[in-house]
Image (cartoon, rainbow, N blue to C red; front, side, top):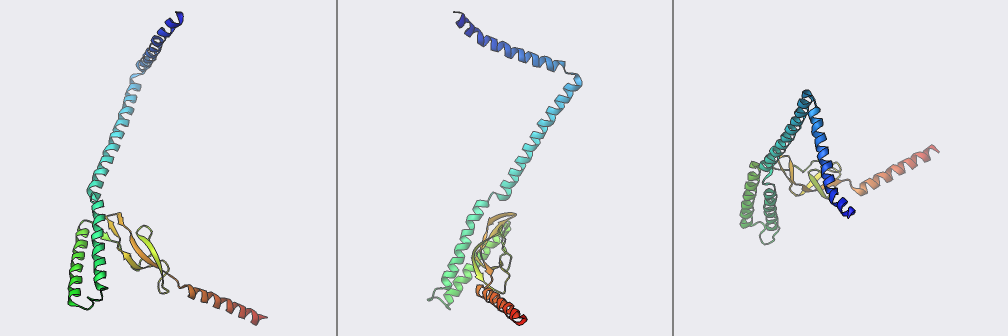
Length: 207
């Protein structure tokens, strides 16, 4: 019976402890000087204002991003139309039955007009082509798909554009797929062999 009474009284004791804690806290707050209370309230107000200001800046940024880049996904999908036009032109130009025909020339002209119109519309919406040819390979803008031997270009220079890349303002919409230059392997090998033979010849002359 005594155990049951103790168990019943235990929750009441916990409540009393919590009440004592609250009362002690309130008494400590009441013991604060007016100057300390004002300073504490000023600190709370400053923290609350800073939090509100951070939220306001975050909302402003999200609003600006939505305005500037809201059509990002749509723009990226639109690039597929430009790619398809380019593929259509290549297919027509490589068709043996249409080569050097008036129908081919007119078709290609029409496709070029449509393609240029689409690129013009993209430019009006702050979407620009990435300059690639004769540019140094930039991993942030270009994606190297292959290497081409070219001794007239510095290694790592873009010599061929496989697929155009585009920027939307300061964001990469799509990287340009490119081919970059590299030195001719046989030439380097022959150069090394010539250097070795010259070194050996000079050594033999010294002996």
